[in-house]
Length: 147
Image 1: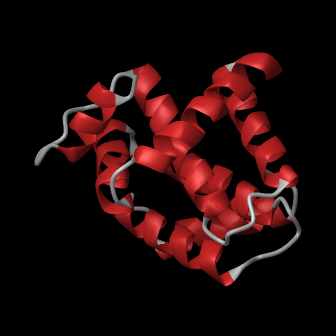
Image 2 (image 1 turned 180 degrees about the vertical axis):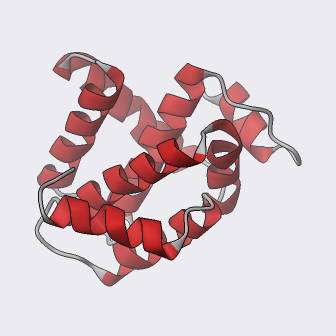
Image 3 (image 1 turned 90 degrees about the horizontal axis):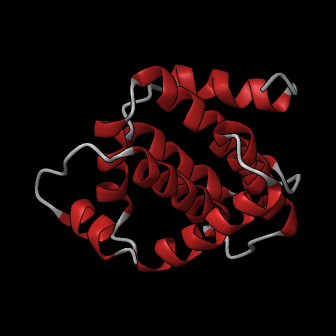
């Protein structure tokens, strides 16, 4: 099911991802961040479902189904560098800031800011071409409930 998407992510010069693939790749990245501390908490899962539902106009059932597909893709996905490179090439900068905001929402969903999640998110922001200032603003928006 994910073979074409994975092949695209592994290509030396990945092509722009079509919308369904970009949506799935973002969902898988949210899962990767949530899993990075070894505790894939229910609050993080619920936050991922909420993000997918709100950002893509999906029903709760559809969002849960997309997250389950993302969990499977994340388990098979290449390293984070290639994964984010394809998203960077497919998504405009402003939308990448929104992606970082969504990732911060997942990181902070369980009420803990674990070092593993924090480190991975800093790496992902850099790989997506989002500067530290914009990532920090995104985090503050989430912490203040303005996201």
